[in-house]
Length: 74
Ligand code: SF4
Image (cartoon, rainbow, N blue to C red; front, top):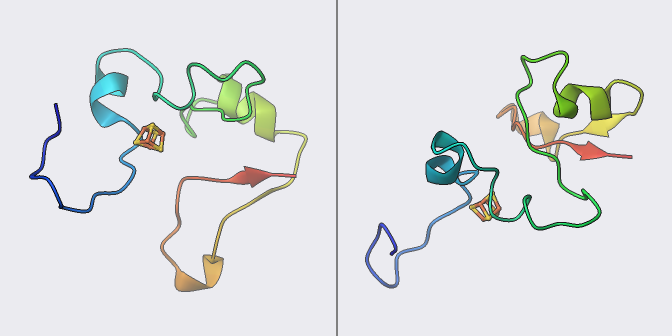
């Protein structure tokens, strides 16, 4: 069930309800190749930080200063 009226535009909230319930985001969980990784930037031993530790990552439009938490790995 959607949380907003039909026709209202929404954006990704990283599946906050799923995550609060202990699940991974809906677009992360089914991916067989782990193309998307979800995790806690503050957990140095978590899979997100482990995936990023030896690889360069970038943010989209860093010049805007919004510091998005989504990063793209090379
Ligand atoms: S499925 Fe993926 S893109 Fe859609 S709200 Fe969840 S995390 Fe965001």
